[in-house]
Image 1 (cartoon, rainbow, N blue to C red):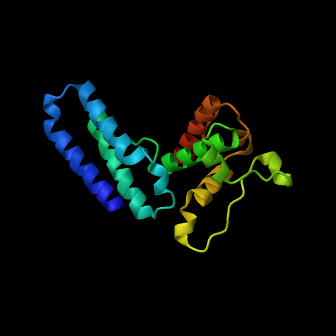
Image 2 (cartoon, rainbow, N blue to C red):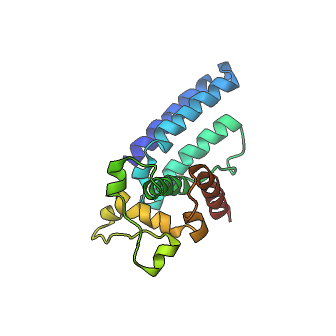
Length: 176
C-alpha cells in the first residue's frame, strides 16, 4: 500500500513538474498542497507504526513536494512524516479526552487512569497486544503517542492552545 502511495504521488509530482513552467506560482502551490494533503496528510493515522523504510518513502514524497514548490535545497525539510502522524494521533486523543470528539470515538478511546497516581499526569492506558499489527491500531498507537508528551502539554484544555504547543513540541522533538 505504501509503495503504491509513494509511486502514485511521485508520478503526480513528475507530471506537475513537467507543466510547471506554464503554471503561475499560486496554482503550483495549490496543486502540490492538494497532493500532499490527499496522499500524505488525510487519514495518515493509518500510517502509525509503519516500518522505517515505508516512512522514508513517504518522507521522500514530502521532500520532493517541498522542493518543487519552494525551490529549496533537498536538505531543507518540513516536519517529518513520523511526527506528522504522531501529531494527528495526539490531536485525536486530546479531542477524545476533552470532549471535542464524536461519541463513537470517545467511547472507543482509551480512558484516563482515574483512580491511579498517574491520573495527575493525564496518561492514557495502553492496551496489550499480541502482534505488531495490533500495535498499529488506533487504540494502541494513540495512547503511546499521547503518553510521550510532556505532562504540562497533556493538561492543556483549549484545542487552539494545544495545537500551537503540540506543533512547537514536535518541531523541537524533530529537529533537536
